Length: 455
Image 1 (tube, rainbow, N blue to C red):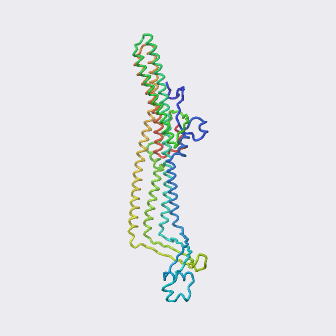
Image 2: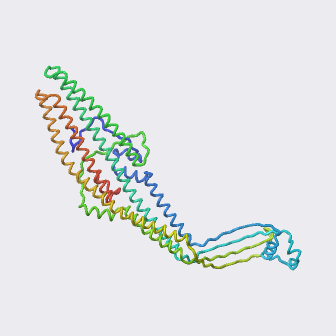
Image 3: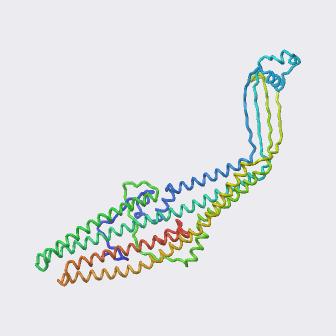
């Protein structure tokens, strides 16, 4: 039988397909949980998406800063017209005006005039009631919130990898149990055939044993299939395409975890959860957006300036002029701005409601994970004791069958109970680790540095 603490040596070690991130990994043997998490944090597309959100938020912040900078433009143009006003003004700007141009005939019916214009023009908002500063602050808070969201994405990704990795280990244990059960069934079949030949039992004993062997073979096939599926799921969590190479993984074994009181775990979650911090930053950003919308009602002062050169030909000489000024703007009927303020206030109410809902949800998540892990930890000890009893019962029934004091039905029944005890024990070990990882995820303390404690 497979001992819960010392797994038996199998003739063929199960392997699962995974992607080795380097040749060194392939040479060192087993794919550890730490390596799997490191690969996921490097290659999983969900994390890349979260990083892209940070990049976009940073770009949005830099965009808001550009409103503080002056805008300067350059233009080069050419025009030709015999419009009287155009001809009169163009000659003045080109400093080509002469006394003959005052002739009524020339003024009314001028000859076409060319105007080659070179112009620099700029403007700068000197004051906008601090609306730009509020928009910059909002952009900075949004960038910080995106960084917190990345932290939560990392935690969820670590949990996903831990779950997938432990599922591989559990599937591997199920293959071991199925193989051992098949060996036991084959041994019972051989014993039954020997006793049939000796005339101590009837043929039906051997037939029942053959049916049991067929059942165990089917269970082994299914277990090996589940192992392959678990390996594919692990590769998906790691964000890699699975190659043809294979690599062994570690062994599933019981681990004892420690946790605080429920209230302490809830308080820890409210302090450490990155998604709660992101919501808080989102609330601050939305409050700043309301201030920016209010600032839009205030006065605005824009300054402008330009320098222009006008020439009758591209390479010729001409005149130049400049202009500078300032403008005060104030909306008398700011209907659009009032609606914009209403939108931002509604957004703030939505964020505040979301924060309250998130606090309640986090308490529920921590409480659920806490009690699930508590139950899983207690189940390990119970199933381990049950497994020891089942193994001893199987040993006794085998001895009784060999002595002719028990039927093959008794043997198969006890053998099936022992197999179920094996599966139940390893399932409780698996759930103990997964529930603890879920608790750490709920409290916001699950990270790549912590995964070593799961093994």
